[in-house]
Image 1 (tube, each protein chain N blue to C red):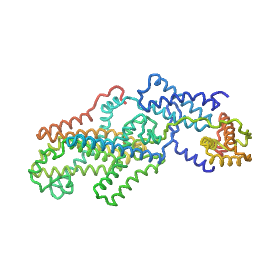
Image 2 (tube, rainbow over the protein chains, first blue to last red; image 1 turned 60 degrees about the vertical axis):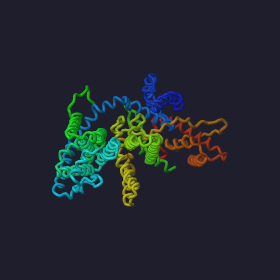
Image 3 (tube, helix red, strand yellow; image 1 turned 30 degrees about the vertical axis):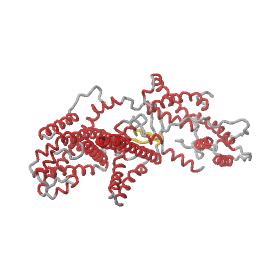
Image 4 (tube, one colour; image 1 turned 90 degrees about the horizontal axis):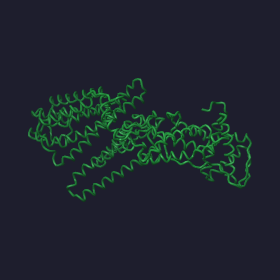
Length: 332
Length: 297
């Protein structure tokens, strides 16, 4: 028999090449692609195709289970490496910010409009209800969050709450706390979208009614403008981020309920990936919001300055996400 | 040996086709529930260890700096917790190995279901869902325990919640978590393994066995490969009964001198040589029930 058709001589003849491939893979996996020199990189595709052809031959001619299993494992590892992601991290991050993130946000525009509308309705409803009957306030704002800011409080107390710097906690700790807390809530908002988006919407509306209720409280003391400044310096970023997180959650829920022409599974997978990208953006926005709230709001107590910063942030996010841009070369 | 054939079919149901651009099927093997659980428990332990390390480092910082270090340690603690909770899995799975420490230890990796390369958005999607699958209910229950207001109802609710999501993979063929479902991924076995030597080397002085073609045709590929495993393990408590069973089946009396291993080796060699010759002529007898009338899969 020839070397190819006798499995035992076939194995002896090829074993050396498989060992070489395995050695290259081991080094690449344990350290990085940079651990390979030019010679290895040139040899890799050849060795990989050699292993694949060995696997094909072994499957057809050999009954040695050990050999076939080994080659399957080796080929799978080599396949994932050869066809895996090998662009350097830096250019991947650059592509993420330049292309993937704005695109993901843009593709969520319909859901974003819906969640924006829901937030507006929720805030308006909270405002009107509390204005008509102050008893609603306790229903919308938990007492531990209000921290004494309720209808029994004096105008002076409410005003001080807007311009005081955060109490005994140092500002940076306050900022870190706000960021991690808000980010966790928005991640939850996203993850809950899986239950057909219902919990996401509930969470969003709860948040919005609370906003409306607090506005009603301050409006009844003639402090609307001051509250607007206090809120907008970080709120334009933070509320926008929450609206986007809810939109991402809604996208998932929507695709599970109405998968369209794809299978439910495939539709959920596509939506999940888009929404996940958007969520990275949301977490970054909340990081900005945490810094603005923790530092900016406590250090800048001028109403107009607060409004200006809030407005600039909002304009920046909108421009970044929604401004149409030139497609660099072949877009894909 | 009856249930071996059934086990063979069960094994086939774990296999998933992934055709490389070169046109070869990689025949991936899905990870089963126990391996997934094992990997997760290892990761959980590592995370707890990292948390302990974080505490330790902060304690050291505090003991050195005194009150002035409080601010820094509070920030480090909050951010460290956040990163650990949300990025432990993501940061490891976007790497070239596509596996966390736990998955590496159990020989698993994450793969895109479509066979495309595993991109970061998939990894992020599959791991952010851990939030509702695990972290949220667990942190609720732990938080209430810490405040001393845990009641049994809440604890039971939390456990039920976790169980629904933890058991979810058992209710679909592909063993997908909710996160896998949303990301279009699955978890497969990709252990590193060394090629072991061929079995069936005959040492000198062992008795000669001769088999007729009819005796060699009793079994199929599956039984041959099972015999390969038995020989490779070479545990006496398996060798003796297997040798007995084969002798009975092919009608060859035991010579009573304890040459079981030599007998099995000789039978393995002879049967394998005959079957491999058959393969060259397009004959593949899958198992002992295969009469050759079917197409053979």
